[in-house]
Image 1 (cartoon, rainbow, N blue to C red):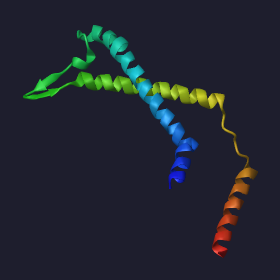
Image 2 (image 1 turned 60 degrees about the vertical axis):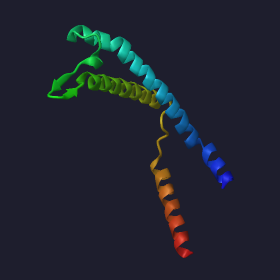
Image 3 (image 1 turned 180 degrees about the vertical axis):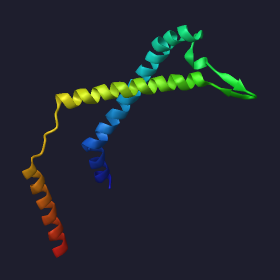
Length: 121
């Protein structure tokens, strides 16, 4: 069981996922800093507030901090845009190998043969 766990951990997918999560967390912190320190002060010039996250309104006893929501929305849009650009760049640098019609037919034939062999057993 320990050997199986070691093989599972050392497979590429798990390690790639771990690296992705770590880089994603660092990237999120970077985008948050960009929004908090550069973009929010620019927006604050137009909304007459020093920090976008502090914008709020109250209805009765309920306090709605719409500025915090706007701050998170800006973080999301910037993060999504940068990931979009990175994916486009990676796809351009490492284009996918297009499979020919013959290769597709061979794959289907192999699959059908495997099914046939399993049914024989």
